[in-house]
Image (cartoon, rainbow, N blue to C red; front, side, top):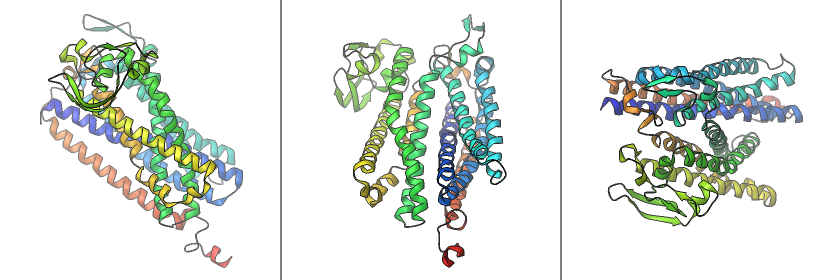
Length: 447
């Protein structure tokens, strides 16, 4: 494997795994805190058990996210030394603040796990909520650093030198809010659907039905917030991309010709040699409206840009289509669930609805991975958009492919360990977390 390709593959693989751990860490504490709040308000022991069960999952995934995040920080320096040499002093602030948020999260999760019956009940709840807030802050701060790569700011680039550095301006660059908003909403959607899907499956298996039903409904509520918020945050992000990175937008839509009243493309197969897209469904003028709120606005095509600055069109276009497809599917599932909740409550216990959520378990993370592929691959060939090419930032050290194999083995092993630990947690629900279970709670049998 070519060293440059190996370096890119290693970062893609590492980010692909870490983004899942990070999103779960950003959202699961809020599900945990909501279940805890329900317990404090209702005094229902099932919610207490659910809170404890989810808190153990949060602890497992927090530890995993810490490991994968540490590995990524080393990889940035090892694989992209030229990038870090120049970029580190500029966007180091969000990484420093992320470290602070991480330590707060670690302290808060320790207080929460060991604070049962030791702290004031509302202070204990706040510790759990603080885990979510600090995890969310960590995610947003890391996204701010990535956004800087898409929208460089906070310095003057003169004769190859990075001068007049302003870290505050660099952190709050033009892309940080659209990317952070869309990422946060996507994390709630993906994690909500994943958790709801797991509990839906356990309900269908008739195991601890009351426990898993309460868990399913909390998770489904969070999933719906994310699913319905995704088009709104996506619209903000798309308009930002159209303004800052028109070539990325053109690649997303495989839009080759500059035109007014540009069509929104659904599906299709891009042909870079002939500079056209085949077999696509085109909705007239919709793309122009989406990027400029004007049906007749001009949208630049790929032909307006030097060909050596084109990103891989097919990868970006297909990834964008995958993200849109699964996003729409989750919105439809959310609409069905809302209709059932308000008008057809008997549907909520039907196997077909539970099975739908179970099938949708990975949909959010598929869309999330596809969206990040659009963000990262769509920026190529630049590592700092318009300033430094990715090929110029890679390490000259040989043998990167062996590092890629090694890190891949670590992440695969880490994932298998997580699956084992979470599966064991689910199996322990009757023994440890569900007070209504008759098989493992002799007190319930006597009563």
